[in-house]
Image 1 (cartoon, one colour):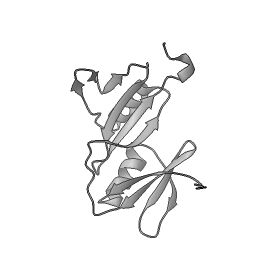
Image 2 (cartoon, one colour):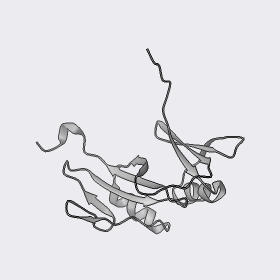
Image 3 (tube, one colour):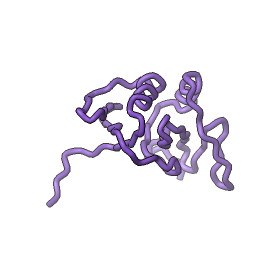
Image 4 (cartoon, helix red, strand yellow):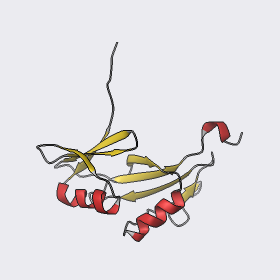
Length: 133
């Protein structure tokens, strides 16, 4: 039987210094651990993610990291005040309004890109027990 101790998202960065400034100054995160290769681990709630130096470039066309929030509008407004631009989407069944989309289950989502082109999601989820049936 396989046994995994933990999982974490890993986020590639072409310029680790620039990326760290974004995550620490724009998102307000504090490094949990730094690696000898320049990588840095951050903790949000009870989970962690790792920024690591990479020669590869992020596509930015799919979510690399998801961050759950209690109040998506307040979080979006705070990010905007810090210079973060929310992505806008306009598809037949998926349209943002000021960067926020209302999802069929009552949840809301928003997306932004970091300095490296990685797409980061915000989610204000509705607990499964309270979702409309």
